Length: 322
Image (tube, rainbow, N blue to C red; front, side, top):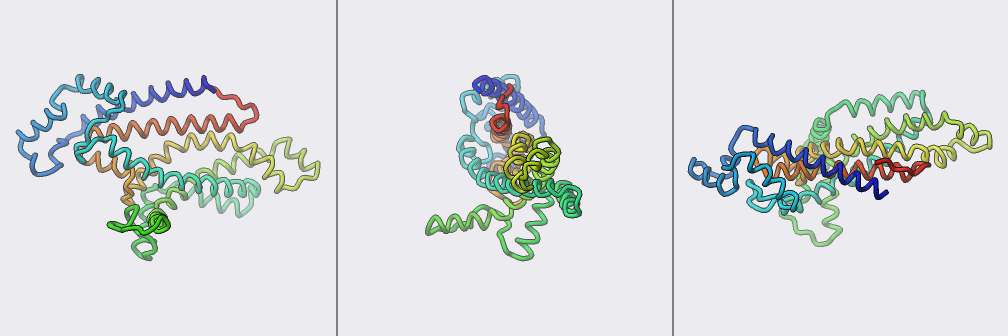
């Protein structure tokens, strides 16, 4: 396990350096002046030149790049151009908001996907199985932003059941934790449901295939010969056998989950890392864009490592390969 952790730490560091480098050169290659969109006080060429000197943008890229890497290695992400405060303060504010969106969606999506995929696998080839396979494939064929727009239009604009934007009521004073929780749940319902739907459909398709494969193995025929019911076989043996492949699949889905969360956040104006990243790109906020992309790449690596470790833990051999 220590070898596995050390190997994954090295991989994460390498990926972070590569992603950070790509983000650095891409944002600097994009057209536009990062200081022309902040406010009217820096519109003149002289004022913009002064701002570039203040933030070190007057130096050539071959000098800015190693300085940026050294700062990032020390945990210093610089100052956000658009928000005029340390990038670390912005990250500390938006990352928890993203987790408040991703964690419920991931939990509900996995539970629903496993339940549906197991149910389909146990009835493979039936009309119900074919119908649900069509539904899940159809959902996965639709871009997440379109699902989010449909949900916002139908349930927020037309029916008015849920708010279309934000995480809490603007200017609201919550009298108790229950009031705060209720406000959050009301605003989170649509974005969480959108992510849950896509996660559940992806997990269900993988789980269905895994269950069909497990049901064809010798241990199932042996259990049936001993008089075990189909329900007991599935709950006791099949789900345990498919747990390792499910963990591995979640590791593959994690990058898509982060990307999908960014899209959903932007559609619903959820004040998380994804929504902040879109705004930072629009305003040419170089330090904030690079920091958010770097943190996202690290999160993907850590999530993938945790999924692989969980897969090894639940597998019969329990071995973990670096």
